[in-house]
Length: 133
Image 1 (cartoon, one colour):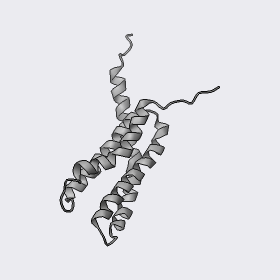
Image 2: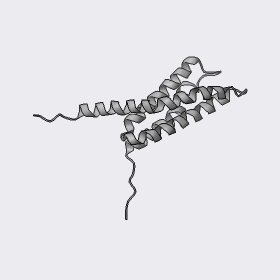
Image 3: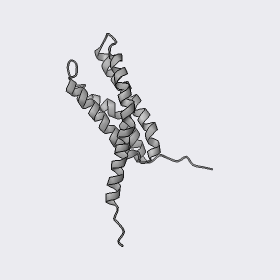
Image 4: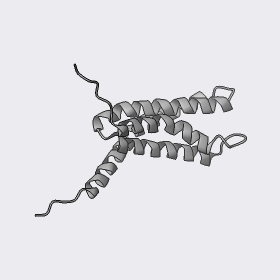
Protein backbone atom coordinates (compact mmCIF):
# COMPACT_ATOMS: atom_id res chain seq x y z
CA UNK A 1 0.00 0.00 0.00
CA UNK A 2 1.45 3.34 -1.02
CA UNK A 3 0.89 6.44 0.98
CA UNK A 4 0.13 9.80 -0.51
CA UNK A 5 2.96 12.20 -0.13
CA UNK A 6 2.03 15.31 1.82
CA UNK A 7 3.36 18.56 0.43
CA UNK A 8 5.85 20.30 2.68
CA UNK A 9 4.61 23.12 4.88
CA UNK A 10 6.59 25.66 2.92
CA UNK A 11 4.83 24.65 -0.29
CA UNK A 12 1.48 25.12 1.43
CA UNK A 13 2.68 28.51 2.67
CA UNK A 14 3.63 29.42 -0.92
CA UNK A 15 0.13 28.50 -2.11
CA UNK A 16 -1.33 30.55 0.72
CA UNK A 17 0.82 33.56 -0.20
CA UNK A 18 -0.38 33.63 -3.79
CA UNK A 19 -4.03 32.98 -2.99
CA UNK A 20 -4.30 35.32 -0.01
CA UNK A 21 -1.80 37.97 -1.13
CA UNK A 22 -4.04 40.00 -3.47
CA UNK A 23 -7.12 40.08 -1.21
CA UNK A 24 -5.02 40.92 1.85
CA UNK A 25 -3.23 43.67 -0.09
CA UNK A 26 -6.66 45.04 -1.05
CA UNK A 27 -7.74 44.90 2.58
CA UNK A 28 -4.60 46.68 3.74
CA UNK A 29 -4.28 49.37 1.03
CA UNK A 30 -7.70 49.89 -0.53
CA UNK A 31 -10.58 48.91 1.74
CA UNK A 32 -10.21 51.89 4.05
CA UNK A 33 -10.54 54.49 1.24
CA UNK A 34 -13.93 56.15 1.33
CA UNK A 35 -14.36 56.96 -2.35
CA UNK A 36 -12.08 55.61 -5.02
CA UNK A 37 -8.58 54.53 -4.17
CA UNK A 38 -5.75 56.87 -5.13
CA UNK A 39 -3.13 56.03 -7.71
CA UNK A 40 -0.63 55.55 -4.90
CA UNK A 41 -2.91 52.94 -3.35
CA UNK A 42 -3.06 51.10 -6.67
CA UNK A 43 0.74 51.12 -6.90
CA UNK A 44 1.00 49.92 -3.31
CA UNK A 45 -1.44 47.10 -4.09
CA UNK A 46 0.61 45.93 -7.09
CA UNK A 47 3.88 46.19 -5.13
CA UNK A 48 2.43 44.16 -2.26
CA UNK A 49 1.15 41.50 -4.64
CA UNK A 50 4.58 41.35 -6.31
CA UNK A 51 6.21 40.97 -2.90
CA UNK A 52 3.84 38.11 -2.05
CA UNK A 53 4.88 36.38 -5.27
CA UNK A 54 8.58 36.75 -4.40
CA UNK A 55 7.86 35.29 -0.96
CA UNK A 56 5.91 32.43 -2.56
CA UNK A 57 8.86 31.67 -4.82
CA UNK A 58 11.16 31.58 -1.82
CA UNK A 59 8.81 29.28 0.07
CA UNK A 60 7.94 26.93 -2.78
CA UNK A 61 11.29 25.21 -2.72
CA UNK A 62 11.00 23.02 -5.79
CA UNK A 63 11.33 25.08 -8.91
CA UNK A 64 9.07 22.66 -10.78
CA UNK A 65 6.10 23.87 -8.72
CA UNK A 66 6.54 27.51 -9.74
CA UNK A 67 4.58 27.50 -13.05
CA UNK A 68 1.49 26.06 -11.37
CA UNK A 69 1.76 28.44 -8.44
CA UNK A 70 2.30 31.36 -10.85
CA UNK A 71 -0.88 30.48 -12.73
CA UNK A 72 -2.87 30.43 -9.50
CA UNK A 73 -1.25 33.73 -8.49
CA UNK A 74 -2.41 35.42 -11.70
CA UNK A 75 -5.93 34.08 -11.29
CA UNK A 76 -6.09 35.25 -7.67
CA UNK A 77 -4.87 38.73 -8.65
CA UNK A 78 -7.34 38.98 -11.53
CA UNK A 79 -10.27 37.84 -9.39
CA UNK A 80 -9.35 40.41 -6.75
CA UNK A 81 -9.01 43.16 -9.36
CA UNK A 82 -12.31 42.18 -10.93
CA UNK A 83 -14.11 42.31 -7.58
CA UNK A 84 -12.43 45.58 -6.64
CA UNK A 85 -12.82 47.45 -9.92
CA UNK A 86 -16.29 46.18 -10.74
CA UNK A 87 -17.55 47.45 -7.38
CA UNK A 88 -16.35 50.96 -8.26
CA UNK A 89 -17.37 51.18 -11.93
CA UNK A 90 -20.88 50.70 -13.28
CA UNK A 91 -19.98 51.42 -16.89
CA UNK A 92 -17.92 48.29 -17.49
CA UNK A 93 -14.77 50.20 -18.41
CA UNK A 94 -12.90 48.31 -15.70
CA UNK A 95 -12.77 45.40 -18.18
CA UNK A 96 -10.38 47.48 -20.29
CA UNK A 97 -8.16 47.82 -17.24
CA UNK A 98 -8.25 44.07 -16.75
CA UNK A 99 -7.25 43.57 -20.40
CA UNK A 100 -4.28 45.89 -19.89
CA UNK A 101 -3.10 44.35 -16.65
CA UNK A 102 -3.48 40.66 -17.58
CA UNK A 103 -0.39 40.43 -19.86
CA UNK A 104 1.68 42.25 -17.26
CA UNK A 105 0.62 39.80 -14.56
CA UNK A 106 1.28 36.83 -16.83
CA UNK A 107 4.74 38.05 -17.77
CA UNK A 108 5.84 39.02 -14.27
CA UNK A 109 4.50 36.21 -12.07
CA UNK A 110 7.04 33.52 -12.90
CA UNK A 111 10.15 35.77 -12.90
CA UNK A 112 9.16 37.20 -9.52
CA UNK A 113 8.85 33.68 -8.14
CA UNK A 114 12.24 32.76 -9.61
CA UNK A 115 13.74 35.82 -7.92
CA UNK A 116 12.33 34.60 -4.61
CA UNK A 117 13.64 31.11 -5.27
CA UNK A 118 17.13 32.42 -6.10
CA UNK A 119 17.07 34.62 -3.02
CA UNK A 120 16.11 31.70 -0.79
CA UNK A 121 18.92 29.58 -2.23
CA UNK A 122 21.39 32.34 -1.40
CA UNK A 123 20.07 32.60 2.15
CA UNK A 124 20.21 28.83 2.63
CA UNK A 125 23.77 28.58 1.33
CA UNK A 126 24.92 31.29 3.77
CA UNK A 127 23.43 29.36 6.68
CA UNK A 128 25.28 26.11 5.96
CA UNK A 129 28.70 25.82 7.50
CA UNK A 130 31.36 25.39 4.90
CA UNK A 131 33.51 22.28 5.15
CA UNK A 132 37.03 22.90 6.36
CA UNK A 133 39.79 21.90 3.92
